[in-house]
Amino acid sequence: AQSVAQPEDQVNVAEGNPLTVKCTYSVSGNPYLFWYVQYPNRGLQFLLKYITGDNLVKGSYGFEAEFNKSQTSFHLKKPSALVSDSALYFCAVRDRSGGFKTIFGAGTRLFVKA
Amino acid sequence: GAGVSQSPRYKVAKRGQDVALRCDPISGHVSLFWYQQALGQGPEFLTYFQNEAQLDKSGLPSDRFFAERPEGSVSTLKIQRTQQEDSAVYLCASGSERGEYFGPGTRLTVT
Picture 1 (cartoon, each protein chain N blue to C red):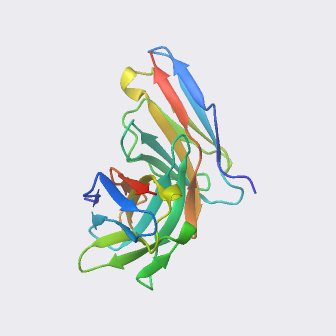
Picture 2: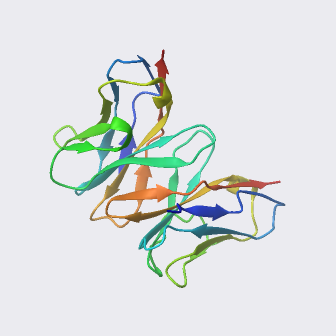
């Protein structure tokens, strides 16, 4: 069965510092992996998607994520956090060989302090 | 270009009523997903369409939930005989290989 874990309910970081939001997953086959961001009173916004190839995926707003197959992780990173990055972040996984069901993590709330 | 739109944005239904929620995907997107998001949780998969074909409906919670996409563009999620536990935000997403894009959602409240 597919599953996604976002081990941190909340991440706090100072503006200008690097940020990491963690995600680990479990699928029986090869995964598609996603990151989304949700701002207050706004819909989910697509940040990036891992399909295949380069393990470092670059996305919107300066975010990137690194696919690590041996650790089954897909952590979201940004070199320098902005106050405006404060939001709720969701990691999601889809098993390529298991239909089209996408499993979302419970979300991690990021607070960037000025 | 226009993004994914959903209507209505808010719906209040009395328990036992039927509701229909509409999704207008991004033009040309083959893939269309429906999700249910409860307060404070991540979205939960309901169903997937590729054009007009419903290829995965494994997430539909009961036979009261029904989705269609007859012409491969607009999709409707119908919930019959609504129950209080159906109260949630219903999200639609359309996608291509590049990514999947969500609409603003319909907040359904069953009283």
